[in-house]
Length: 273
Image 1 (cartoon, rainbow, N blue to C red):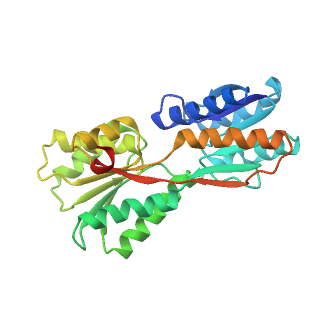
Image 2 (image 1 turned 180 degrees about the horizontal axis):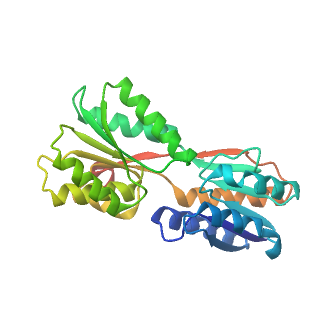
């Protein structure tokens, strides 16, 4: 089976692991996989999907940059009986199946970790990803709601733009204000690393609690070096493997799951030792 995987970008650690899982399962099932990066541009991704018929794939995987922009073309692909599965966003009604991470439980877990290590009423800084990502919206909503339940105060929201350097600059500006806070939650690890950079550059002591999301290798290293405290570990490789497995079932006419949630867990220095 000739599978095309349309994804946001290839050089992001999270997507590298998803691709690794996709390729591993494709090799196991003797399928051919072609990865197609949109360089984080939703317009490019739409154009790439619209051109699918020119290359005539047998099946399609897609990780949307902005899901609402590609629902029409995805529904057309479904209508032509080409198996299509989304990875990391819920798109049921426009794809045959969606494989996602447990973002609701992940957001709750991040807030609980902070609550377990901070006093009631402690101030928290939220480093936000750009709008338009349903998966991140779920983790944000559950994190914010759990903070309210635990009486943690989100005192500042900083737009991180998925960019480490941007987060460092904006976090340094916030630190210069000398506002009182105890912890930071970044909605992915790349942005959490920007917080680490800012805290180290300003030599903040005592260091605030820093929690990220994804479990990428550099974040795990920072935790072991005590520069960061925790990250919500996703399993991107397993997401990729599961998506290919579902495509295989659809192509063979077998029963398959329409919605799959891959569990998350907290990585801390204790679990990494």
